[in-house]
Length: 538
Ligand SMILES: NC(=O)c1ccc[n+]([C@@H]2O[C@H](COP(=O)([O-])OP(=O)(O)OC[C@H]3O[C@@H](n4cnc5c(N)ncnc54)[C@H](O)[C@@H]3O)[C@@H](O)[C@H]2O)c1
Ligand SMILES: [Zn+2]
Image 1 (tube, rainbow, N blue to C red):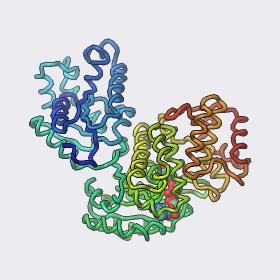
Image 2: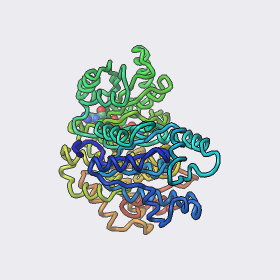
Image 3: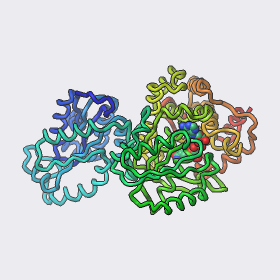
Image 4: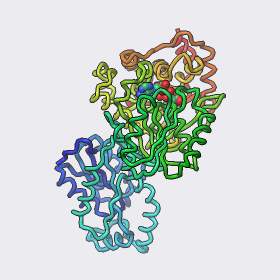
């Protein structure tokens, strides 16, 4: 029955206890011929006692840890339905497991109906134990509402049979075809990454509930290549679509350019419900994202990243900004898009050096989080670099999902999780800045910076020499540099001191313990850094 190859291969059910997740989940699994898991059952098995006993004997924290573990154990499973405990969605770490290839469904019920169901059920749930249980459920639902809203679909369950509810879920599953989702309080959204999906742009916007007008912002290199296709796709789906084209290049990522776009939007009488569509590389997605965040205090934003860097990095995570003459990305906002559409086929026209530069972030994602992606990058480098429709799409999807997971865990760089994405960036940024952003592209500098971080790790006995060499040979096989020539060392050191990631005067280094395992270290001796930078600049 799983005939829709684009649909996610996992369905996860969330919602308050008493909404029928287990019953409905079993029915869906049976109909699709999939396996069924229930995190509550996982907890009971592991703890070897009922959930109430886990709560009573060991406390809620112990329960949450067991629940997290139960979810983790099924994260790599395909073709399965997972019923999650009602509170599991509150944990950012759990949410990071619900990002890739996964339809998240919330079963919703009116509080009174749910209370009655729980009260009359043979098995007494903790939720209805004791007095005042109705108002407790009310409070709980109000508190959890924003988290349940992170779901892709919300299915009402009142006065409906489990079979009916299962029908709804399966229908929603058949209609969904996104590669992954960012699940954050600031705005959950889908990311579609595929070959030729630019022509589906209008349909995809519509599926997210957008309508009316769409204002495309693009640049002078991208617009002549893909502008018409984007506008046509939007118009075909009933949007009034128009475009504003900025000159290509980082020099135009400024407030001055933004001001011109505001003028244009005002002259077009753009409204608050109309969407801004960013069609271009990271310069366009950062600028258009900033405009969408600020115009009319925020209008819907759709990213259509066209460079490799913007697909796997800039368009994912909600950071938007423009540059100031004193520095890059000085003025900006966190602002999540409603949707990201990455058409891998457009990479065929990306200038070779830009493409190669983009691989640095993909390689970074692989080393910091994913051995499997790393092996794929190593064994299929030829096909991947040539932009093979299948394998390159697969790699880009995976890389996007890894960033989406990290962002879902730490939307605003508050818990430290998002910091791991800075791997290679401390020295990388400094090298970029020392060359006044003209000698090296971002990815080239990051590749060199990753070699620096690996070498620092090796000197501190954190990174093995084998891992350093593995990283070197992968970076080289994608045509990226591992050292810089003609960059002034003093300027690199000065730029590093200025780096915005400086905390308490000490730089917080992201180092690699193993593939998929980073550590933060703010006590790297200055002499080691000096020496390593020396080695990189020879
Ligand atoms: N917001 C974030 O989290 C984040 C993360 C990383 C980088 N960034 C920002 O991204 C920017 C760099 O992004 P970038 O490397 O994409 O630069 P870019 O947008 O300047 O694109 C590079 C060049 O390629 C062209 N181009 C893009 N797609 C093309 C295609 N398919 N075919 C032909 N030409 C194409 C562009 O017109 C441009 O000339 C920087 O401003 C950086 O600060 C932001
Ligand atoms: Zn980067």
